[in-house]
Image (cartoon, rainbow, N blue to C red):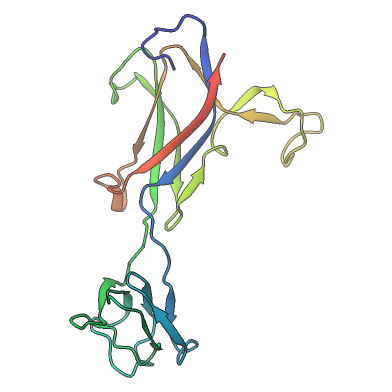
Length: 210
C-alpha cells in the first residue's frame, strides 16, 4: 500500500476481496471405461483422455493397467471402448498418464502483513500473520472473505445473520492498510508442500485507497 511512500494524496487503503487460484489445470477424462460403460462406441481425436477404471472389461489388457490414457494417434479413432487397445507403440496408440493424473494436493497459503520493513521475510516481531487459507485437494479456486476481519462500517443490504444478536449490524470484511504496509503471501511448508507448491498459484486482491 504505497510501500515506497511516494503518493501524497492518500492515507492508506483497504483490501476487501482476495481469491486464490492454482496455476495448474487438468481437464477431466473425455471417456471412462468401466462395467457400466462397457460396449459404448467412442470416437477419439489426438489429445483426448480415456480413464480406464476397470481392466477386466477390456478385450486386450491395457499396456500399463488401470489409469488415464491420452490418445496420440494422428487420425480419428472410433470403436467400441472395450475393444480398443490402450497401449503405446502403434499408429493408433495411447500414452499412459498414470493413476493420479490431474490430482491436485491440498495446499495452505499464509498471508502476513509487515510495517516499516521492505524485507519479504522479516525478522521475528516485524510481521503479523493475518490468516491462512487451504485449497482443498482437487479444488482450483477459493475465496478468502470468510477469514478476513470485519470492518467497522455496517452493511446496508440484507445478508446471513446467523450468530448475530437482535440489533447487531452486518459488516463487510477486509484488511485496512496504512501507507507503507505490505501484505506477503506464501505457501505453508507442510506435508506434500514441504518444499513449496511447485505449480504455484495466483492471488487476486481487490480494494482501494482512502
